[in-house]
Image 1 (tube, chains in turn red, green):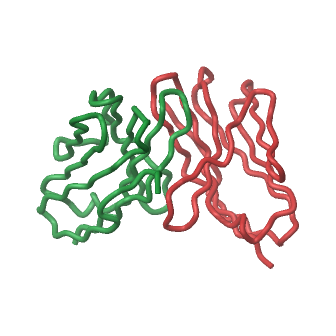
Image 2: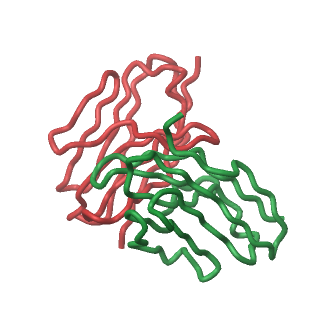
Length: 110
Length: 112
């Protein structure tokens, strides 16, 4: 079964805080991993891909732990504009579509 | 705008009516996907096309749902005899094989 699990939150954090989200997936043979961001009543947009070696993009760091079957997203120095739902996404095999978690809601408060 | 477009953006219909949605992908993208999203959930896969061929359909896609991509460009998703449980956001995405999927703004369906 192809499942992606996330804590739905909400995470309410002050500006400038560091916040981390985790996500677990059901199939150890999963191939590709992503974090998408979705603003209220908008479409999902790719935030970053997640590589085995981990990757960083500005204030955002994504990591993959294949042995424990989880991925994480770390946001440093949170901004008000980071408030959104963060969707964990897995491709379980090469030709299958994206499988989304339910999303984690983040609210950054002034 | 060269992104994915969807039409209409909102649709209100009465139970039992048929509805059809259209998606225009990014022009050079050969893959086109349909997803459905309800409140508090992530998008759920419905079906996808590579060019004009429909390669996979989810078990979520009941017999009342049909999708086409006749010339490998735009796609339509039709729901026959709509039910209240069909109320959702219907998202279309497109991609080149093996590359990021880009989503359209979605069609929000409300069945009364």
